[in-house]
Amino acid sequence: MSARSDRRWAELARELEFTRLPEPRRQAEGWRTGPTGLTALLAVLVLLKGRDSLADLPEAARATATGLLLTAFALLTVGSFLAVRAAHGAPEHEILLGGQALRLWTEQEVARVTRALAWASLTYVVGVALVVGALVVAWTTTQDAATRPVVVRTHTAVICGQLGVADRRQVKITSETGFELTVPWTDVVTVKPATSCP
Image (cartoon, rainbow, N blue to C red):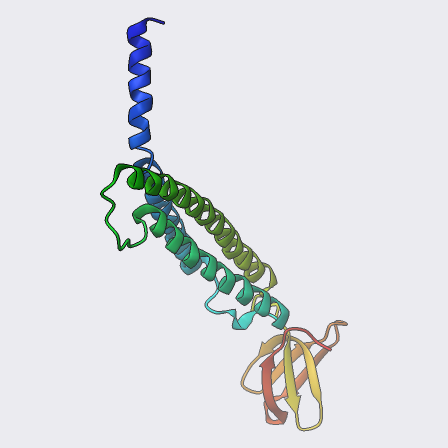
């Protein structure tokens, strides 16, 4: 390498000291907007493919999915605040006029931005993973209405099984053992969906 090339590299290295803060701030801006788009994509996916509510889930699955979604919401919110903090900084009350004070503040701010950006990226990744986990729980534990058992209460008995043909006069219920029972509507008190038959 020539002396001229070495001088140019040395000048670039000196200039880099003064541009250390804008680069991590630009990265933080990307982390702030990128996961926001990903979160919006997940919201659209839930609207198009997801269940209307968590009410169709069994109790344990409902509690798990709700816990995952609440934790994901908290993590994504914290990640957004950290990314905003990294991209725009915290409000400062003092104006630094001295060169050494400005240099020290810049070094500390670069460290704070880098730390905030690392935590923001971690919270985003974990938050999105938890949303996906909640969706998997919801999709794998919700029974279709056609296969969900029902509990039919009559004046004399409680019957649990798959709902069969129902017309104006009677309802047919197939038990888990395959036994088919026909009950007249005049004897039926209630018909309710069940998660499983006892």
